Length: 114
Image (cartoon, rainbow, N blue to C red; front, side, top):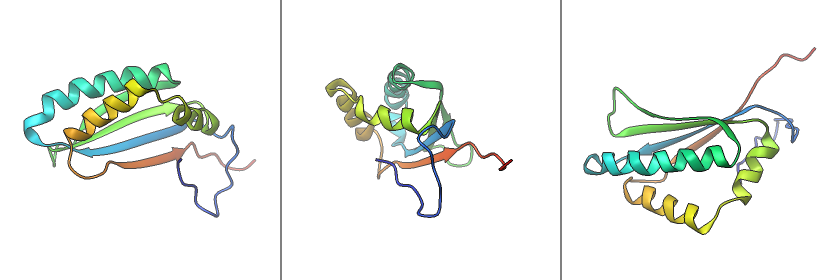
């Protein structure tokens, strides 16, 4: 489950949530990685993401960043509960094309207190 800073007050309905996942992809597997990530994008949208994308870093071509937006924090937590065996198999395939662990960040829409 995603970690939350101790000093951040977060309601379950807080949102939207922007999730980013950074991958380092072995160059010989870029094409296969992108095909698998497009399947992953369909799964993210199936599980509640309103927007999804995969981006390549222009300065570091082996770096890719997946982004997706979910309506609320609770909706993102539910995404973690919806993972199927097929989803896990896809995650393992994606992992086989990358080196190191992906870096995941969760960003909550910021508003000023009224």
